[in-house]
Amino acid sequence: MVSRPNDTRRCARALTLPAALVDAALDAVFQPRCAACDALRPDAPLCEACAASLTEVGPACPRCAEPVELAGGAVVPCGRCRVRPLALDGLVAPWRYGGALAEALRRLKFGRKAWVAAALAPLFAPQLRAVCALAAIDVVTFVPLHFWRRGQRGFDQGALLLGAAAGPACVPTLRRRR
Image (cartoon, rainbow, N blue to C red; front, side, top):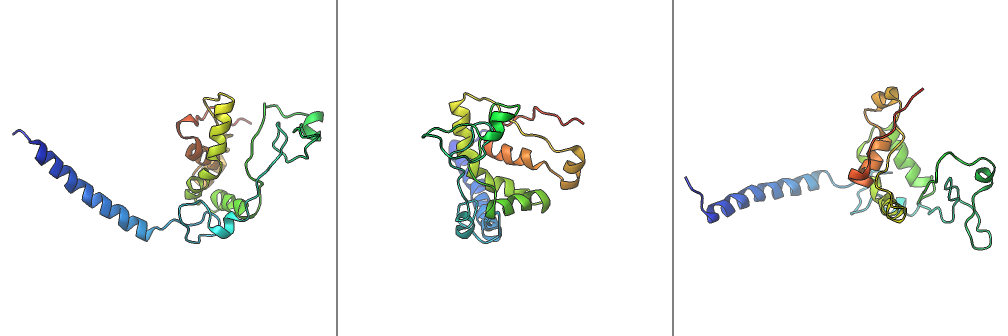
């Protein structure tokens, strides 16, 4: 039997309509929630009240991302990094840890709420992409959890967060050793 183009289009429409209805029903039942407090939210990681608690890091040490005061308009390494620099090229942090961000991260790590990783990814994905583009970075990785902790939690929060933010650029290259 040879199918005609109209038959193919009719079949495609018949398959698309139920999928659209299923998506609409799921959206109605499982409405997006704030990653920190579970309040209903529009298309944002955090509700308005929780988003107001976010504080940008601002000027920070280029080595450890610790907030620092500007020295004559230039960002210089913090005192700790001048005395004993970390064994890496640098860290970047868009937000200070605290408030709703800290609560959301605690829910991810200790509350076994893996969906929080995908909800939080938009908070740091733009800066991650910008840093990767600026420094010509092709691959990013995370520090893996110990297998015992990963077994307790059921997932590795670092892998989930970075995977949601970096997508295919996130490669598990490190192994935890004693």
